[in-house]
Image (cartoon, rainbow, N blue to C red; front, top):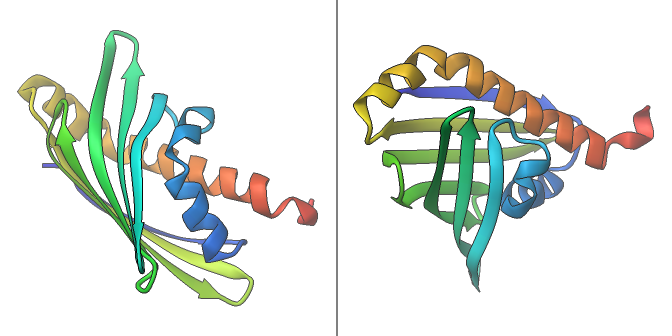
Amino acid sequence: MPSASIKKNIPCSKENLIKMVLDIEKYPEFVPWCLNGKIHNKNEKDNVVEITADLTIGKSFFNETYKSFVIYNKAKDSIYVTNIEGPLKHLENKWFFKQNGENSEVEFNVDFELKNKIFNILMIKSFDVGLKKIANAFEKRAIDLFNSSQD
């Protein structure tokens, strides 16, 4: 099962980063291989926001949609994502945000497994490269959206 962790310091506020990560419907604009993002429902209760959303990912002949459940814990500045249905046998993403002066430290952990054993083997081989591309896309998007004054 592929799993990895990435930590980055990004020159913008944690609030803006969290808002960007939760804006799932904008992912196709900047996330590699993301073809569509759709939020089905969003519930806010005290310090917790719960979102049910679909992401369609694809490249060449591979095109799949998976439904996920997202929990944003405001008190802990964390986002936790699990899969509900789709091509994933298992998915667990954890985002942690910490403000460090004008920068924010973002830690992203992912652990997943596809139901299709052949695709799972292919994903394991290209996982690190793909994860770095996605992490860099989030960083670039954050800088473009929230730190354009330093150009």
